Amino acid sequence: MAPSCFSGEHAAAVSAERLWKVILDVPAMAKVCAGFVDAVEVEGDGGPGTVHTLKLNPAADVGSVYKTRLVARDDASRVLKSEVLEVQSKVGKIKSQVLESKLEAAGDGSCVAKLAVECELEGGAPLSPEQEKTIVDGYFGMLKMIEAYLVAHPAEYA
Image (cartoon, rainbow, N blue to C red; front, side, top):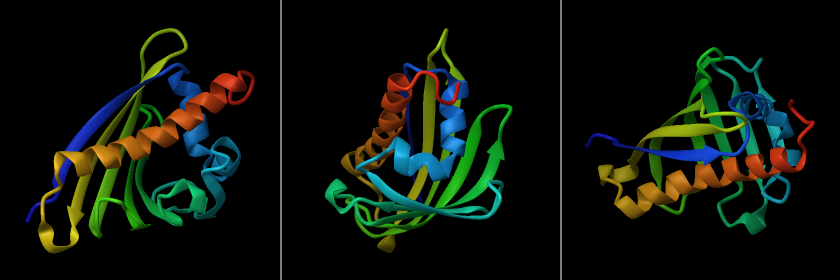
């Protein structure tokens, strides 16, 4: 069966430039998302092929490891595409998951984060709307943590 494809958007009260700088600074996630991300490992130079492993806080109730490989990075249009290599998910056992995120300026000091997801469960069953929402909400939940950090620290990543 074909993967489920779905998307979502989140308006952020910080500029696309600042948010992009933080997203590219993966080692900073333990500081920026304190209490959710405990540690980060990076294998690579930040370009395509780089593997990021986020060790999550057990209290976050989302699993212990989130591991991705960067497939593509376009700094000019602020687009990242990555594939999930390892994740514990509340939606079931995931066979494959590919994410594409894009940041678009939306006015003075704000932006819109757009997420497109292709996800396939083991066994090929399609994702329900609730499962799709769980995945999108998880990504935007982390984005909201980054946004809150940037709002609280206006001089950082300026």
